[in-house]
Image (cartoon, rainbow, N blue to C red):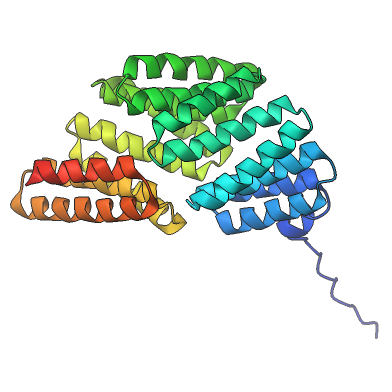
Length: 310
């Protein structure tokens, strides 16, 4: 009687094993993890890329990506140290595009910590490096954020629109997604939430196609704020609840604090005593989290909301 043997299982390498084969694969692997919100694995993949990098350009790229992962988990000092190292490598080897990327990334840390005035000169230095359209778009985006932070929303919209043109020229879909979100946020700030919602629906569609989870949930946060201003409170509460859950589990504390402020605004808009108490707790917790995370602008917004609720 003949005997048959079961087929051997097919070996499927892990993403970490795949990324260890080549520095470019490692960078792509890290980006996939980062986009999916798995920052710890992204950091490991970028570390592998750095260990495999055998040219100054690859080292500058890999160490900047390490900084991106630190920034995603709001380890600001670690992120800035990585960006400074990337900048030093790029300058030492006359790598203008990578110098602009490092300057832009370092300035982004400053703006996320509420220092728009300190960030703006770095973004302008990045533009002075005469980078290609993708990096030029990043710098213009961030200059738009600086303008928005100081209340110049008309200028912010101009800069965001210019950045969108750059991203489209570069074929950089993630940048297109960021720019659409930023234009929508500027419309919300200028009292035009009805103009923001179609843009945010487009952004959500792009984010799903690109599997950009963080940007999809940032879109949900912006949708919540637009719905709040339009008086669509149930929809606003649903959207901000989804965003809050994601940013809480991802450890993105400044984003979590932003969501708590918006949730407080939604609860307060119901104009019911028990909701007012819950809103106050949201503002108090948001202020604590933002201050701990070094997000001074978010803490200031939470404190202002507390004062208005008193």
